[in-house]
Length: 128
Ligand SMILES: [Zn+2]
Image 1 (cartoon, rainbow, N blue to C red):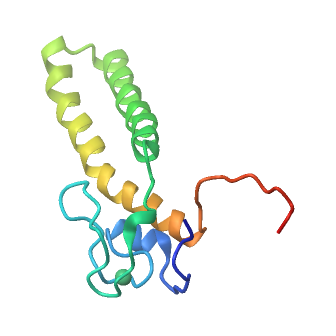
Image 2 (image 1 turned 180 degrees about the horizontal axis):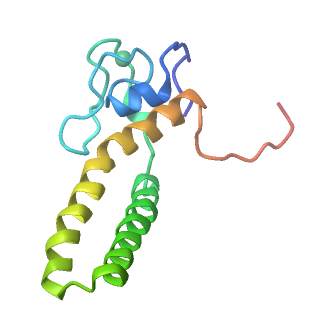
């Protein structure tokens, strides 16, 4: 499957952070929270090339895990608060950092996939 013709002055990072179409930067990328729309409502780009897989989740687990564990260790070593205060502090931070970052990060990876024309690897048999 070839990607549709590439043309874009849109930064994949700007399109991703705004959850917009990677080609025109105007149309919405998602139908729901994480459901990618079938195509762009502004330029008609077919989003079937989307294959971000588990990529956004891996990055978020690494970043949010380092942030929350680092802060929890710092708070514990500095003040030794009771367990319930740890739960009160870190549960909302985990939810905000993971759910809040998931959508823009998925959109950014899709925009980068489009900008770099990334697709599934194929063997080159050299007879073309
Ligand atoms: Zn578009």
